[in-house]
Image (cartoon, rainbow, N blue to C red; front, top):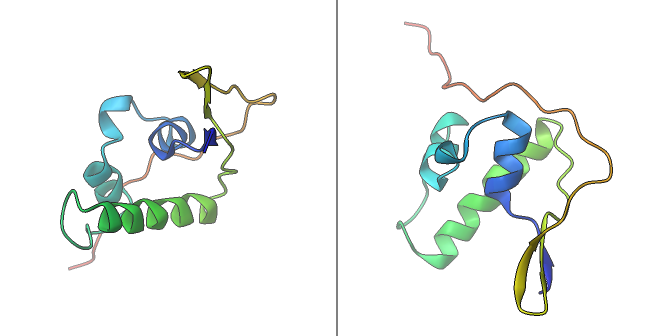
Length: 96
């Protein structure tokens, strides 16, 4: 793969949150989700990242390639048109 979508970067840009709030467990928590599976398991991490991506799509995010490799170097791919973001996700509020 020479091009991909960095979900952490997309999440931060879409929900307008700083990079320190884009760790997998924090993103899930802010979206009201629990981590499913074993932490640091490649398969479980992938499933949880997919759940975040689905939620972002439901919230109106247009996921686009935002990173690529060129001559062995990581490059950021800029979007030609800025996309409007959504408000930062909030913890679900439960009624007592």
